[in-house]
Length: 57
Image (tube, rainbow, N blue to C red; front, side, top):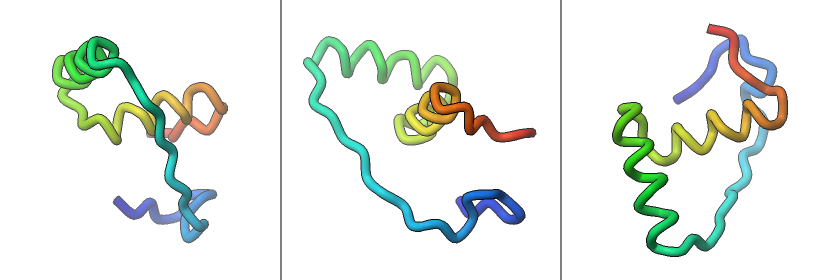
């Protein structure tokens, strides 16, 4: 997804990863499914909220 007229548009992207226990992953996947979001979308949303970079809708 390309965000036009967004402060971060065109900025280099980095990859973030972590190891989770299977039970943690399944709980997170269930949360994503309930919200109708992909894992990537939910992680980006959570990171934006924590860092104060929430998108204006």
